[in-house]
Length: 260
Image (cartoon, helix red, strand yellow):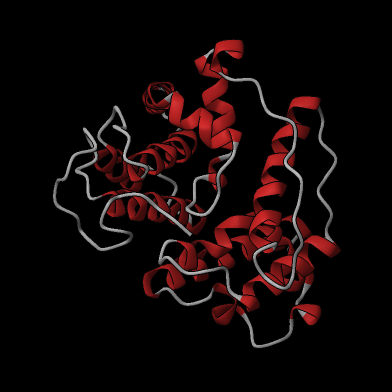
């Protein structure tokens, strides 16, 4: 079937996969994501490409952030244009609105470190696991997995630091339920905690391998797994106790803490 005849939803989904694949390729060599995407200016980028940039948000900068570099201009220009053309969608509930608010904050906060953005206020804090229970909290943390990047910090990250066991429980529960999408997002937080010098309470790399083998094989899933693996490698740990086991790659500072 010709591409032009596919439903709009399929066209946008294909664009997300394309941008995720190119971001994943950029992660391997630390190049700007936008450099691999297009030679056209952000202002003339097609709408599906802008929609894909909107969906991936902070992860567009993952190749640079994980290499210890600042967000780059071309990628920032693309994301800023995507946010201008495609405002955040209306949320179906107050809880969803707060999650969307934090997702939007993460992208805006990174853009503010470039000429294409300005400082953005933090949204209202979300209730922690003491209030909603670790199961509901871990599901929400999975929705916020795009915040598990070096260079981002705030109340969501403080909750992650203080409740690593809840993240580990959520990961195991998702694996047992064969909800590999949620498991992949939560193990990314565990890898982030490991990079912060905290014991992840679960062996990260075997979980990543399991999800890679049994997952959906999509580029977007692969990008999330690659970010988690790079975070785990950068910690210098083995993925279990946060110790100083062998690393498969450099990925970050020698002391295991990420800065930007």
